[in-house]
Every structure is written in C-alpha cells, then in structure tokens.
Amino acid sequence: MAPENQNYLVTVEQFFLSLKDSGLMLSATDYDLIQQWESKGIPVNIVCRGIENGVAEFATQRQSSRMGLSYLKVYVEEEMERSRS
Image 1: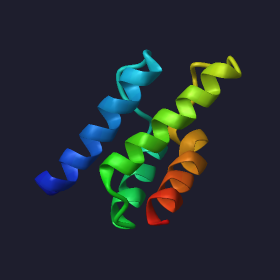
Image 2 (image 1 turned 45 degrees about the vertical axis):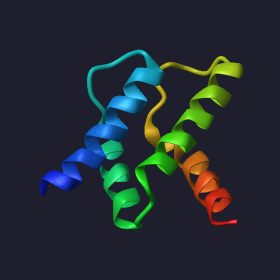
Image 3 (image 1 turned 30 degrees about the horizontal axis):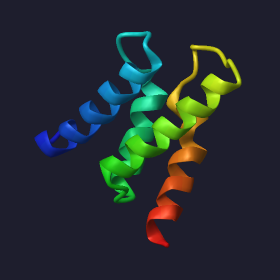
Image 4 (image 1 turned 90 degrees about the vertical axis):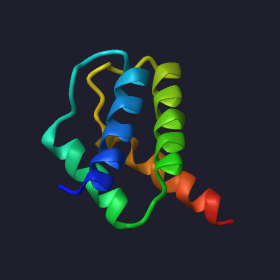
C-alpha cells in the first residue's frame, strides 16, 4: 500500500475509533469501505465529518457500541452531497 493511501486509511481509522471510544482496530469490511471512499475521491475531511454526524445520531438513539463504518456509510454519502451543493 502506498504511503499516501495509508495516511487516508489511518486518519479515518483513528478518527472513527476515537469517536467510538472502543476497539483497537477496524474490521476488514471497514478497511475495504475506507479504500472505496478514497478510490471515489471523497476527501478525508468529508468522510470524517460524515462519520461524526453518524456517530452523533447513533448516540442519540443509544445504539450499540459495536457499530462499524458500514452503518455510517449513508452519513458519509450525505456529507459528500452537501459538500457538492
């Protein structure tokens, strides 16, 4: 993996884990999703903002701490749409 790809992945991983406040690493599915976002050219700050929105929403609903990034995919996509308008 190229260093610039690793930066994107590590940034998203650390941001999500810090918000989630549990776990030491992501699942293989989560890593794959991060790589998909990067391949689509979604800026890391947009991804992080979407993740933050999703985690906040899940917190208000008192959802399980076992949430993965796949649950937050829709929030990242919504944030991407907002950034385009």
